[in-house]
Image 1 (tube, rainbow, N blue to C red):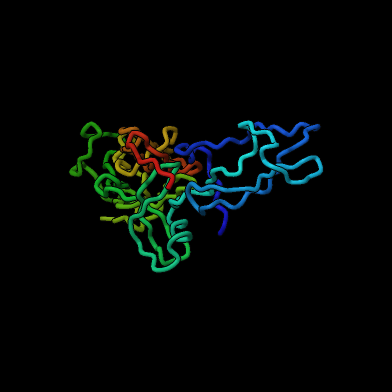
Image 2: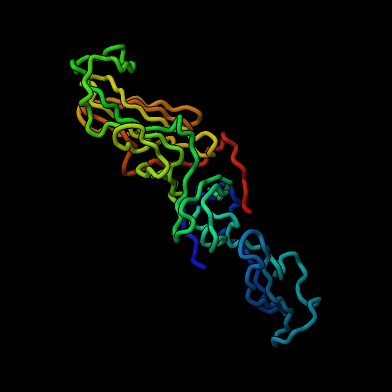
Length: 301
């Protein structure tokens, strides 16, 4: 069985932190009798809480085994048994689920995984392949991305106080990448805690070109009047967008409005320019974390 990947320490916040060191007491050098310990056995379970044992003997100065009563009986004497925990029984993503538990007859569907010590429901896709992909389920009505397709005839204006009005004095020859995509699922990397904004496996593009998740833009106006919109709604997933994540404007005469609510589980963006768009910082990515205000279940099993 391959080793589990290393992740950031914050991913284990929901678990009991293990000690990295502890005090030990050696036998006095002139002791007539001393404890001798053997190596620890393997953990009694391959996942979840278990125990391990070792041989503990009482020896005299010559190394002969004698009655245990002759050795120090204080609480600090060596233990013959202790608890152990190799890994969680719940997988960390769909690839681990397939590798550990479902070698054959794997089916796509919703499964429970462990993220930072909390139980999260994900959708596993391509479970019959070697490396299945992990998605989270979303409401397609509130998770969308748009590059607005209209362009004002008088670009240095902002009619209707900047509100959307499809009967504007506009042409339809705006951005060549204009389109509208809605997402019922988005792909996630639960080891690096990022959403893949370019995966459209479970996206529907109602018109125009596919638009990346969490992205919006337009070629509508040369003043501060953005019309392209995006929506992120992670309510019900147990996840939220990181507080310090920022959206970056790209293009000419760009402007944007980013509104955050529900502890960053909901984000609405309005972006545009002449032409311009916004998207999550490409060097950081769309980073997510556990949303404790959604009260996700703690679980180590």
